[in-house]
Length: 426
Image 1 (cartoon, rainbow, N blue to C red):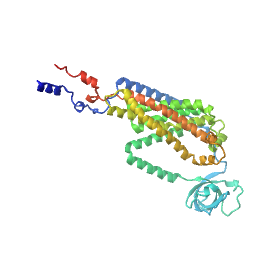
Image 2: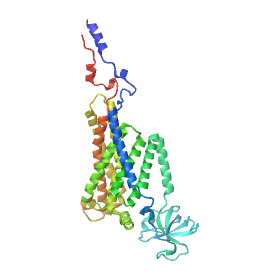
Image 3: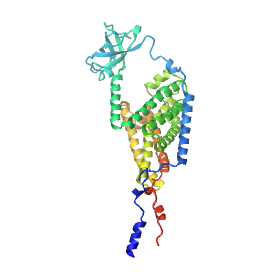
Image 4: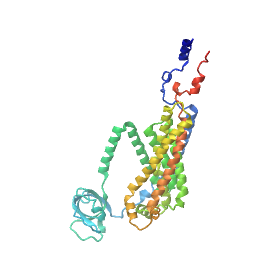
């Protein structure tokens, strides 16, 4: 009797999970149902249609104020030279004359002198460096002493070749390490840069609202950046929806807080030069447009991570509830938020180090320093972008946890269902 009951129990026990696996695998989530997939598709297509409509409506004409403007005065041109000799430069506040050889047709290889600002000559000029200099033509040397060689004026370093080599090295490294996904991400980045150069900047110069243009540009950049790098799937579509939610929050906070915090966008030399050439531009709106774009990369990062984490956790915990998956994924999200906070802060500290050093030499309180000029603008940009990022994490996690269905097959059945399917004992 006991042997028969023991044998019956062995026969009644459910088979191991691996004997019920289907093509999805024991640990792989089942495909999302037809109705959720249709809803996702409809939402993404609506966002895509709105983005395309925005591009068509705001697209600049063939001729814009930016294309018609002249950066240089008549008769002035920028020419390349190669530094031949640099004199010894001590502590001086005066410009330094550097010997160079002209490489452009107007100079025809002749020797020239280049007037270089002291802060550049002190530690930024070496023999063999390639420079871009201003040739004033008939306007003369502007008070520089008469010399046998023409005197030109430093404009900038020529960086195309070294930066091109650095970019090539980066592409090769990405191809070797990340392979196809890394190269697809680079293609998405190239598409995003093209949107900025061919649509966003010309549209703003053409007089369109900079905030609206930035919103459309950010929307247009999301699709290639996400789908090129990570493929088209329910998982990546979840990240796209979360990213759009984060952008919406970023735009709302930027509009509400911009005027209240006095973000004029007029701090810095670039803004002042821009306004002198294009007084019709609203520098505050241009600044807010930059805030919207600045948070896009980090936003894509966290939404992709959260969506992928939810799917992986569902595969690892096939019998748990959606709320458990949401809670576990949010624990990852909280760590991501913490790391992003100091990542953004340190990135700003590094990029604005000269400005921070200058501010520290002024006799003023820490609060006055942090709430003044360009420093306050960067703090505002970081805070607004971070708020959008933080709120996008629970939104993306909730969508992903709801869509990441339990795995198909025996591994995905709950314990209760397994008990219900057991044959009744006699």
